[in-house]
Length: 236
Length: 236
DNA sequence: GCAAAAGTGTTCTCGTTACACCCATGC
DNA sequence: GCATGGGTGTAACGAGAACACTTTTGC
Image (cartoon, rainbow over all chains, first blue to last red):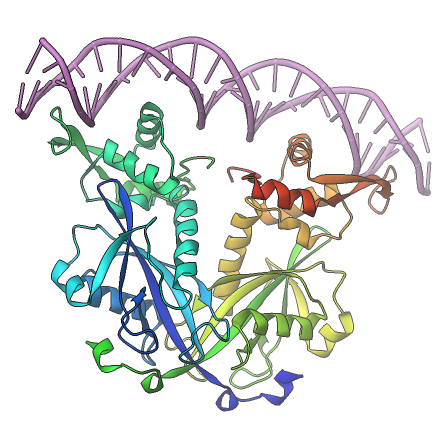
């Protein structure tokens, strides 16, 4: 009866708690992950997710937002808990559990200087190098989650500029789903939600004709969501 | 630059890590939660989820399985991580983060003596009392997750006896979804997966005619799942 | 013989899929 | 004027929703 013996908080073992963050970005049709050179031993200098130990005076989320701000200069970005990695020997440096998270950022918004100063680098998701500890597993799990979640919530928009074109949006979903989608059906479906606001501007960087820019209507989505609406993109 | 200063593991703050488990059962058409009387101060004697601190020598999952075994006598039950609760002041006893989990058990399999010895009790999910700390929030979140998950994975079966009838299964889904389902459509859909094995026995406890018993075909499901099959029950 | 739960089929609707051509423009 | 990517409509199909009656048997 372990619990019978341990009646007070002070007799309990304390544990190192870290949080590691899979930061995804989307650039020119390619989904990318931000990694950096680890600064502490063991494995100092090897590729690692962005992370930190959790401090006494902050929640796990606070800690994750703190490192994200430090590494990218960005605040108010999409961040969601993935899962806890707590195998006793997962970290060869010390017993340490890690709360993995994933974040989605607009790849052109971040502070490039800040990123470079930290030795961070973007890798295409199919070219991710060996990472320290169990970080490659975290990335695999995060990608699975991202694939699931994007089909059931409009979080893909977090990876695009505030103003985007339908072809851009489609290429994002194609990168996430790892397959080609039908132009007409994709456009029809996305517009049918009534959540995209068509602007009077065109983006001409990818074609001579130019593609109309849209904004995602966050307010309308919030309202719809509260009244039981479900964003569902595909039966996968 | 918090990280610049903190270069070694040994300078890091350690934190108490607990795991709390929402244990669900299903009995006579009602979804229930197992809670118990807390044994440590503060709030000693009040209703609480089943939980424990995580030990140096075990993973979070190990800790959860340890308390589940201790409280119910059950092993090999469905257990999944929910999320981490880590607000700095969530626990008034000490800084402590908790990894919430949820478990599904066959309500007649557990060891009743063991449960009573721990002062545990089943509550219908719409009659759950005030629980200590943030445990009521955990339960709300666990119910949301359970509702989501049961529509996308065949985990409902974990709450029923190994042999069950279609009407039983339907009443389970009705309890989880909180609404009446159509008999014919439900039966048709569930049987269409080809994952239920019809037995030669009937259960006569709820009707004179008796209803045929079925088993869930776990092996077949594993195979189908690997080849990309998705169990999808409803678009919610 | 009747109450009470188990079991069974069909139609309608709507969303998903598949598919091919014209449009606007910079060069 | 032509190459390039943007934008549009329709028909066939399949899955989900709605809906009512027969069967079995213990009392």
